[in-house]
Length: 186
Image 1: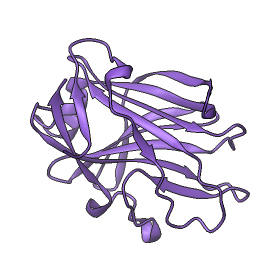
Image 2: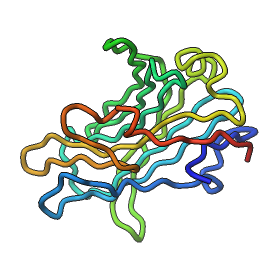
Image 3: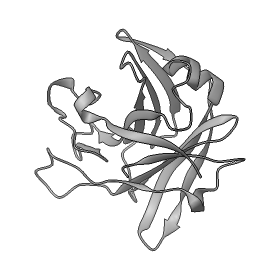
């Protein structure tokens, strides 16, 4: 089985969730490929995405984002966070972005892998389902998606993903850059 989005009965139990690694940096010519991770789940009330990157001194515009596509491919849901603390959740349709209300809390600290920063971001499940198309978040469904670690900083530019992605020519969200996430009960 490929990547999954777990249905959980209550608040997220992060210890029980699969963790996805952002390690694919196809354009990196130097050795700067920040290790980053992500988790995703559905509770009865929320779609929750947790993302964190191991960077001791991140540039302010260093960014983590997730993307999930509507099954028909017409809309994208994009939760994101920057190292300077800015965050949000966009719905992209027809080349237009709409900001969606979301809740978030910072994820930061240090463990045996190093110093990290990130976010846990929660979006109302009914709103997410409506934006992606009714029924998109049902058990047994498939939701195309990917996770990204990005920065345009001239000192440490990078573009990384969980799944192979063609970062050239604005193809980061192209259908072939998204991998199918199976929605399963946990």
